[in-house]
Amino acid sequence: MWDPAVYRRFGAERSRPFFDLVARVGARQPRAVVDLGCGPGELTLSLAERWPGARLTGIDSSPEMIGKASAHGGPAEFRTGDVRDWRPGPDTDVLVTNATLQWVPEHRELLARWARELPPGAWLAMQVPGNFGAPSHVLLREVGKRYGVSDVLREAPVGDPAEYAALLDGAEVDAWETTYLHLLPVQDEHPVLRWMEGTALRPVKAALDDNAWQSFRADLARELTGAYPATGSYVAFPFRRVFVVARTASSGGNER
Image (cartoon, rainbow, N blue to C red):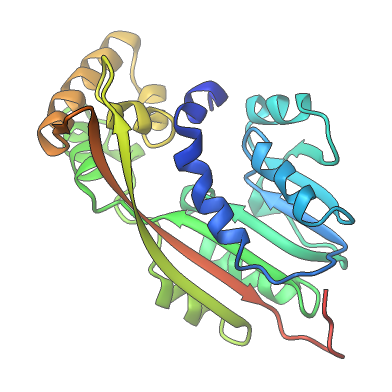
């Protein structure tokens, strides 16, 4: 179960890659814009400011997230759905999926299919975390082995920019990676642990009973303290992300 409040603990840091991604989309007057994996909806609604004339839709598999998104009101339709079942309509000129496809093992096939099915001149914009080799996730997997939850943890679920660019051959592709240095304020609990509770630790919490979860959490916190020591009032947390913006082949000079 997703918890919108926990996910939004580091809202500014989590939202920055979304805006960096969308800034590279060159659509001018798209007819329909879809955000797959829209979460609590604030970032989706920001797309209405960029493209006020577009029909805007946000889709997420979490009823909790969609409930929070729908409560905002505003010029977007929000609904629950599985990204694996989604198909673009004939007027879907922009597809955005931000920090979602790392949860979908078959996302490479989905990206290739979406690129084929989107209308000519449409834009596909994707961002996924690429930090699975970072100390945070290495330690997560090590502690996970001790608690017998290795089966719910993923070692390398995403590719690099070159792999995605090759996958979308035939489209005009802009692919890159960025490592953000997040300076997380020191609090009562280690801030990297608090960050991970919003995303990577969800499957672990679901797999353990309450006592085992509290023990797991304490063990991981001790490991993270060694890997990410505080410097003054902050902990430096490097976070790599992978971006892809692709435009499908245009027919007749489509400038949407």
